[in-house]
Image 1 (cartoon, one colour):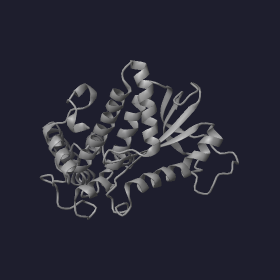
Image 2 (image 1 turned 120 degrees about the vertical axis):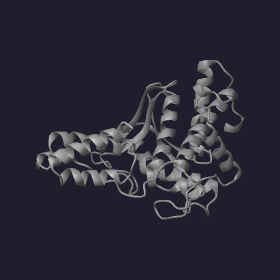
Image 3 (image 1 turned 180 degrees about the vertical axis):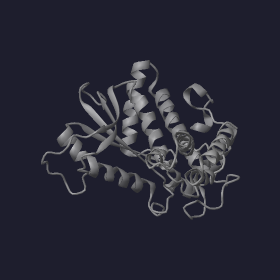
Amino acid sequence: HWLTVVPISAHGFALHKTSFRDALCMRYGWQPEHLPLHCPCGHPFTIDHALSCVSGGYSVLRHNELRDVTASILDEVCHGVELERSLMPLNGEKLHTSANTSAEARLDISARGFWSNRFARSMFDVRVFHPNAPSSRKSSLVSQYKKHESSKRRQYEQRVREVEGSSFVPLVFSTAGGMGPACTTTFKRLANLLAARHDVPYAAMMNWLRCRVSFALLRSTIAALRGFRRTFKMPLLQPALALTEGRLNWLCGLICWTMHQSVLNQQMYFPPLPTLTYFLFVNSDFFFQILLALLLLLLRLK
């Protein structure tokens, strides 16, 4: 468990002070300090809401963190590990009604030689759910794992087996640190392969894998709890279009582009500034635009 692990930064097992306090609060059911009262989506801000709200993109961040950690471990014992591999398009194959038949369908991880034959391809798709979300609160944890695994299998298993000629495994994790049955089997297999490769006991390797998963979930959970969520919509600045229409000169276009990158990277010091500046650039003369550009550069370099 993350609480009993030696904080070794090289393995990703270290937390700074605030993260450690938040992790303790979530483990023991205490209320973390300095949380906002309301989420930008309009709901009261609680731990359960922070872990199930899609605002801010933290559910995607959590999914990608688990995907990348699993892929990096698979890469040690498998060949041809790929992320976001596209599935072959269908050519008249008949799949059941709930299967994903999209031409752009893809799966999170693909690897060769995981189960037996070194040339056989295995495909994995990750799902992370919060067991205390409003939609899941009335169900037992066992039934929630079963529901999410069944959903993934209905979407992809038949297509992967019949069209790709590969095996499919749904990797279902919960934000509490648990794994579904198929995911548990997969990580046991991983522990066996890694233990044989590095000549270490199976129990020690399994413990190390569980710690990797635990810290990946913990980091993404704390990010969702403390991460920034916008309370307003950022306008999409389009300096290229403004230059084409003759509303901006090249200098103002350059400054607008710099601001656009700052907005995307969330590095602006004053949230309302992009809207105001864009309006002033478009509706002012050249001399005032130069003064405003210099002011923005000073703020950018502050």
